[in-house]
Image (cartoon, rainbow, N blue to C red):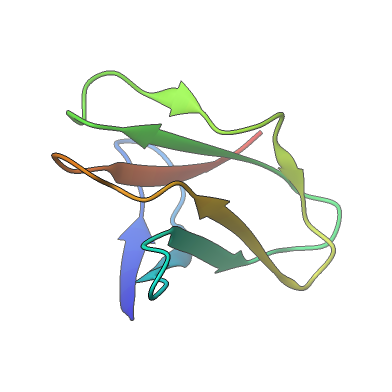
Length: 84
């Protein structure tokens, strides 16, 4: 399990993402502890320059939220989380 702190220039620090790879499917599980009523945007990138939103966003309910991404078959994939 790998935990990454999430923050950008001028942004508040968000809870760390927990990123795991499921076996044997190879899918990537991205999860974080949410705050009730807070809207989150999860994004992914292959190059840390061009980012794509995952889904329509997530609304926190105080529990751990997660997204199960397709397996990474070539290259790398990066994730970031933002509050909306």
